[in-house]
Image: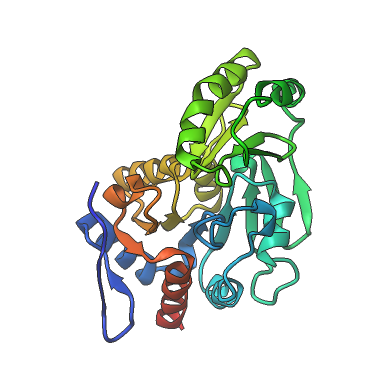
Length: 286
């Protein structure tokens, strides 16, 4: 669907011109009726830079101010992430921010929901396969390359190779055995930027986005992401477009993952570019 953006900003509003007709219709629909628009964003790589230690990831310094300026002008702002919802809230600095009283964080690909209005997280019981994988993973990784590390997300387990001497080679070497382990316990493997996440099937960012958009009754949607796990959300926006809901696909560009560029209406330069886009949108709607 499309290519990356014509990044030349409009001198009147500093919003980039989407590279596709569907993207231009999406932006027009959002600007025409912002009170019915959903702004949905990934966290890592989109609002926060990718870092070697995921525990050290923090939202771009301009992310919260931009979101707080934009949120009161639209129907909903939602952060959709593979992280636990409370971790994303903490790393994003989203709690207790004026203007973000109605922010929603959909964690674990939508299995968890945090509402700023209550500060509460709602979620179903964890999949039993996660505990089984957690128990077997140390043995499977006993011979893994140095620098390989695991991240226990509670409802999923991720294996990171970014710190290995050859991150891509470690990623490829571990992909098949981790896929086998996941399959034995009813889980799937979600590949990302030097990370393989073992998680329950049936929930992804696309399903989470559709549920949220339909619950809001949105008249337009913007989704911004950077990684393979965001492709289902891109497909969800494509589906919404075919059903008559305008949508805009934004890629937080990187050299590690290029698949989203091919489908995006607008490509920006990483989290700083996403923040600039959000700020320009908020100013345009002021």
